[in-house]
Every structure is written in C-alpha cells, then in structure tokens.
Length: 119
Image (tube, rainbow, N blue to C red; front, side, top):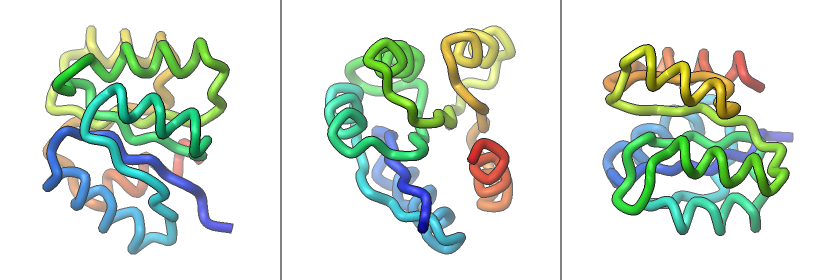
C-alpha cells in the first residue's frame, strides 16, 4: 500500500513540486496545507505516514507544528523542507523530532531519497 503524505508549505508552487515528485514515485498525497493551523488539523484527522513541513509559514514555524503534533502523540514521520539551512535550525528541528531536513532548492531526486530513507 502506498505511503500517505501530507504536504505543508505556504507556497502553492512548492506544494505542487513536492506533490508531483512524490506521486511519480508511488506516494499517496492525502492532503495539503498552506499554514500551521490547517496542517495541525489535517495531520490529526488524516494520520499520514509522512508530513513534509516547511519551516516558515504565515502563522507559525514548522518546528512549532512539529512540537505540537509530537505532544499530541502523532506517529507520523517528519521531513522538514525549508530555505533555511543553518545548522542550528536543522539541529533544533531534529531535536524536536524531525526525521530529516531538506534545504530548498532541492532536486526531485533529493526529496525522494530523503523520504525513502525516513520511511
């Protein structure tokens, strides 16, 4: 059965790119969220296997969403996808439970490799 993925990014273009890359590699995109509030609600409702999570959203930071969902007991894997690549940010996200971190811009191959490594 295909792994279920929730894509969280405020950029429609970026959500589309991630969706295309993952669907072409057999993943099932079960939801998309442009902001943190929507992301949290969809994650808890849909229980995806993986959440791709932008770190800078209009209403909150990706690591805040990660922390909330971990506290709620969500068992999804988390791949942070962000233009922010500073090691301190990457380390903070991993400490909070991110399974991996991909820096934008990335290739479809980089994204799929990271997702496959996590799952």
